[in-house]
Image 1: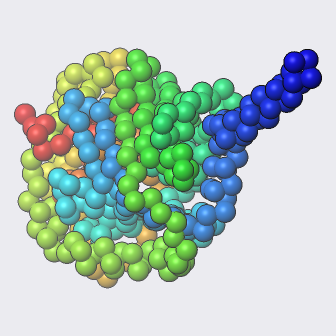
Image 2 (image 1 turned 135 degrees about the vertical axis):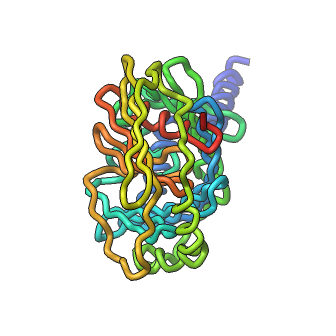
Length: 341
């Protein structure tokens, strides 16, 4: 018996080593694998469904994403409620562009998007947030590796935390939930058909080529008719406690400009007018010192205290010294065709 004991002990230790080797990956192992995949992947394509609960009504919109190594991005936003409001964000060697084909408009942004803030629908941004947060929580479910990290928004008091789910077999992103201070998931991103793409070319991210392709899908003439007839005044459903104290209408060459002033602890001014359709020959991108930001079903140009976007044939300008960037997005996202008075 005394001689058998060391043998049994050796066998037991060997079995434990094998079990340990076959066990779950550690947090460090998963982070390393994610980083390696993000760096070595030649490109990817994926479809994303983003659900926003920042307003009174839940909003969903579809995003098609193409990514090519060397920081090339194509993010096509499909607006389900406004087919003519589809837009494209392009990042290439020349810079960052937002295309609005129905208005024949393109804007070049003075921005380091997408590196300047969290982008819950971009794979590299998610990995970057995980690596940056040294206190990130890590857990394992039957099918997913899950990270709970801080967000990297320019003002993260409104949406400070996020949960990121990766497939255990492929390490591909599956879902992201972004939470407010009360642990409510106000933004949810679902990834579908995430796959590596090796055949993408620089031409796939060319501004002129993408404008031509998108314009063919949404004829400019249709938007021109709609934009010129858009005279309905829309109001935000989310005002962060501010109340409408003044509404003025000013006649311009393009039509009626409506200026609304909201006052309170979070005061702001909202201006809306019919969107102007550029002539077909106007192909020059307008340079703006702002960042592209998703707001409801459209892409907005956002600076520190101002936000501009076009939706349903109407151009909106939102200005405030009191609202945070996330609060401005929530106000903008709450404006839709159902918010008339």
